Each structure stands twice: as C-alpha cells, then as structure tokens.
Image 1 (tube, rainbow, N blue to C red):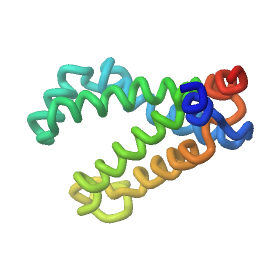
Image 2 (spheres, helix red, strand yellow):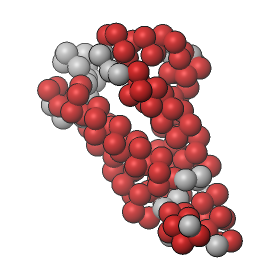
Image 3 (cartoon, rainbow, N blue to C red):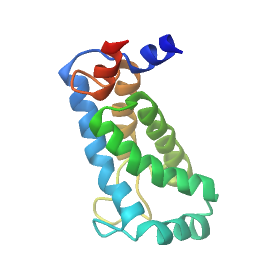
Image 4 (tube, helix red, strand yellow):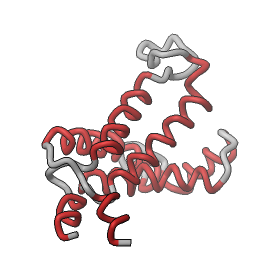
Length: 151
C-alpha cells in the first residue's frame, strides 16, 4: 500500500507542472461552482441534475459524477491533492464531452454564434493539461509533493 501511495503521489518537482495543475483547476472551478452551488450565473445542483438527466439524457450517476469532478476535482487540483486521479477523471469526462456533444460541430468553438454547438478545441486543451498532470504529477507546489516526501 505504501508503494502504491508513493507511486500515485510522486511528482516531478517542477514549477511548470504546478502551473499546469493550477491553470486546469482554476479554469474548471467556475464550471463546477455553477453546477453545484449556482455561482457564476449557474443553476445549482438540482437544476443541473434535471438538465443533464432529462434534456441531455445522461444517467443520474454520470450527471452526479460530472458535478463532483468539476467542483471537487478542481479544488483538489488547485491544492495539488490526488491530482493524477482528478486529472484522469477530467480527461475521461472531456473525452466523453467531445464524443457526445462536440464532435459533430467540428474543431472550433462557437465564437461568433454561427454554429449549432461548440467545437472541441477547448476540450482538447483541457485534455492536454490533464495528460501533463497524469504523466508528471502535481509539481513542486502541491500537497501530493509534501505527502510523497514523507513516504
């Protein structure tokens, strides 16, 4: 168990990886806060669950997972706590987003409102940052780094 924790939490002590982790966490946090708490113009938990399950046809567990990953995952990424797990969760979620809602709209986001939906360029950026964290860990400034030093 000790070796598993060490492997999971060990991080390259590089400031650049901390920047990637902080960027991903800070960009995703407002989306999670919209869905869970209704902040930043969001609808809150109940309305988001309703929208995901009835309008988008997602299962309750998938809808609930999205909300948890975006909110608690982003906070954990900002702190650098179990970052590989949360980055993997986000990468998987955004791969799902690409295949279920964005692929049909092409690469570009809907900057000018002339598409029927969003393209997948933003999702690719999220996946790229998440892969950096999965491969390299949380970076120098992280709880993961502090924990792994003790092991």
